[in-house]
Image (cartoon, rainbow, N blue to C red; front, side):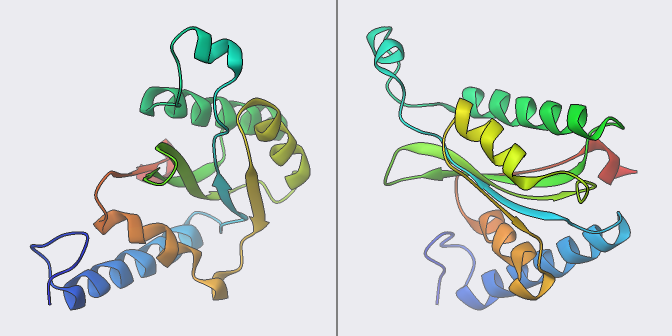
Length: 160
């Protein structure tokens, strides 16, 4: 049977691909000191002022800059450089906007409510939970590898 997301890959191959990516993502976290947070970052609809200027939905570039701002905030809060992270940006078809799922490491000493508040005051809803390896966040994150319009990125230090 062909996969809904990729008609060239059967569903069993897509499952194997997601499982391999998920295992790798978990191992990657282990090798880099462990994941601390699982985050889902969404974007609220644009303000009336922004819509008057012709903006109705957030776009890809806007969300990319938001992610960079969030990492800058965490870097400043850490005081020792950017955290380790892997993010997947997905296009929400029902709302017509991108959103993020991410695994973040090196932030165990930071308060999640501060990170949540920073995101909420600027962009929208944030769900930031302690990482629990038994919940399969690496596998969930990697489901976007086989979906169209998915974008996976890694912090620079994970390439070392």
